Length: 254
Image (cartoon, rainbow, N blue to C red; front, top):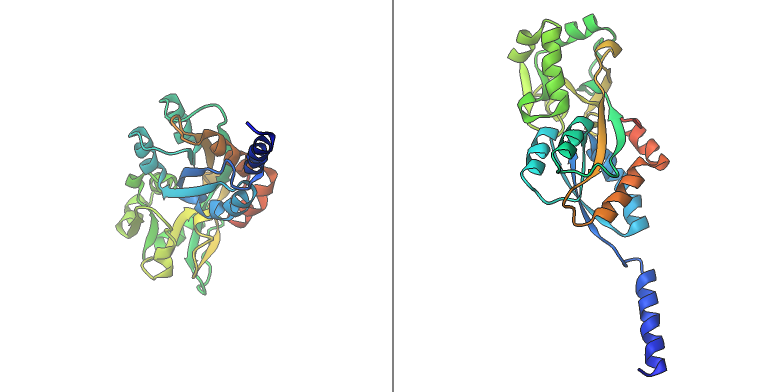
């Protein structure tokens, strides 16, 4: 091969390696609802830095667990840690690289402009729930972690029957939207899923003695097409630079 052609080919290979698009991947991420707002913000700098693109698919943890067990193709799952660990044990997710990336508690929301109800103690929260005309939360049958917990909690508080009679259940998405549009007076949901909803106010978290924190973990799919890129995304989500975005969305580092 003539030298000038060889030098040209080597130059093209170097340019390809240095090109911003070199090695760019499309990462499919399955994520539970509470992480949606955080990811939407954190993926912008990630895409600029790596030139990887990310396709987000959002659903409740229960729905995602069934889809993963059913063999759906994906690269990365970001779901509650208990679900992640169960799927690792079943061989659907990789233990190597599994990282806890965020935690969030459950909060109470009301419509913007309304006087904030008292939820400072367990008894005050019970009165607020009993006085409300309608209470919105995730349908526990859908597998959403906050809905499962809250449905058990109202039984423990001795108000299960009264609250269920006026419950407005949502299969997934932002429960606080039911407050914003007037279908419910009070919403109980993960705080990170209350903060993004326009027209509502986060009253505050559940009292400490009955609070329930959900830790969200990231793990690569056992059959991921882009495992290296998925691990790069995990590193980005677990890094110190993610903390401000988590805090702004009602979450914390685990």
